[in-house]
Image 1 (cartoon, rainbow, N blue to C red):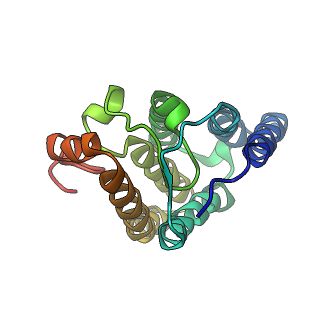
Image 2: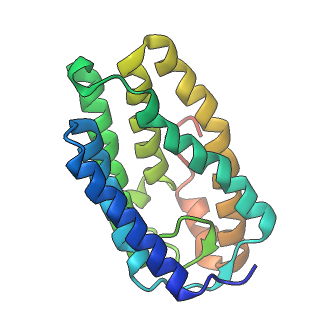
Length: 196
């Protein structure tokens, strides 16, 4: 699969930044917080990304369900005023972890799987996919803000989708970079130490 033209990457970054601005202007705290993540993603899309190899169509297809799952979080969340302190703290912690993870990736960030220079420092020293941990915390908090049942169902539904994406990314990175294969041996846990 060929790399998209740079103009498309710039337009995608600009559109995400515009979505962030609309989130800030929405007047709701949960949308403004999500705007921080959108602004981070949009900004990272605007910078040049070194690319060694693109994903094949199956690897791209494997990542799309996890992207779609991320889009439902705020749609199912209760209004921010109805959130309890624990749920708001979980969402905020997930947001901070996701933003730190993406900023640590820097120019290696991308929306779709691709072989960019592996990042093994910062929060990536403890788990291989800390941004997904943050995303999962945010989505779980959105579900919990509505009901305990949704708070339990969301991680159960999202984990298999994230697992598909993680496997596609790791296969691509491991096939491209010897350093990444060594990193996977050194950092054994993908999302949660002692579990997976």
